[in-house]
Length: 228
Image (cartoon, rainbow, N blue to C red):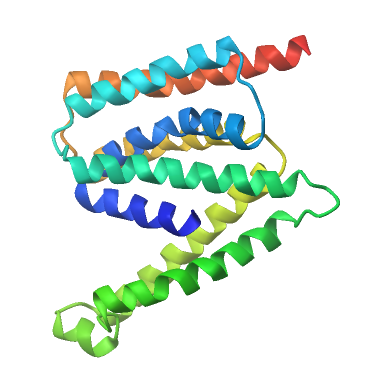
């Protein structure tokens, strides 16, 4: 699931805009609620289900008005939601078994190694040796710049994933996915300015609705904790 989640996310980023991919991935809580019910036996309250409605509605509205919309980009982003949240829920299932549990660093390290072993043959089959210095130079790329940026990207990505797993060990998968959606506000806004992504009024309304649903869920969880 970790491998499929990373693959489908990058596939979506290659097909549609960064802002649209992250809008689709705002549906993470919806998938997590379903998967948590199946694998962890956590039954959502009516208030939680209600808070998910604007998230789903906002994603649908944003999809209908997205300039860069195409089905491969849409379905790969949806697939990444399913894969990543399956990974989180199954990981949490391991973490809650105290007598047999692995700590978050060890678990994520094992998953990363397995992901590397699973996907290396695929990368070699699809791209061959296109990452070698000779090939990059022949393609007119600055080899040093490519390697430095790749290194920095990998360090940032691994740090983000590791912190994400540290948080997952302490909260429920649903709360984790909602918190993860908060970062999408920053990513969406930054990508719109950085890539000058054109957005319509309806598209921005859909994105706002989806993110408002995330905020509504967080308030529902806070009220529930106070009542408990």
